[in-house]
Length: 180
Image (cartoon, rainbow, N blue to C red; front, side, top):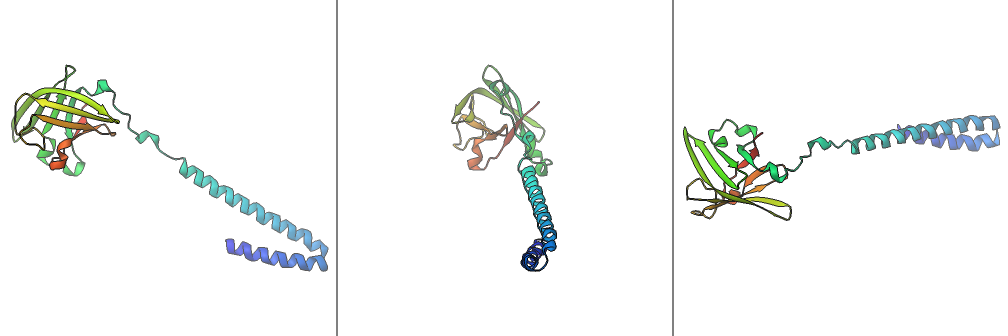
């Protein structure tokens, strides 16, 4: 399409030179063709710019996640996995219940057995990173800690409003979602 216009433009330049010498009435017709070509090119340019502007401004802000307020931290958080792992019975075995008096209960339901642990927690925020630091009252194997044998566990609140187990450094990758 642009190649045709450049050939047309070259032919018009040639005709203009010839028309100045021999036929002045052709010059007006050639100028109309040149003006028409310019108008078409401007419209094509405006269409391209409009399309680019439309694409660049079509950001869907509805996908942005509103961060949880401190009062929304309390309540039940359940283990969350991608849909491809949803049928695995171990993928939904843990949950936490955070109470307003800074106590918590961790529950594990697996193989028709329920295990509960409790303790206290504090919420620490540094450099826009919010962590839940849990302290258990007694040791149990379901405490998710890389140090082994400790009574502390930590979870980090991601920008997507999911709690991630900080023991992922030692292959325990658990994610929790606030239950509504």
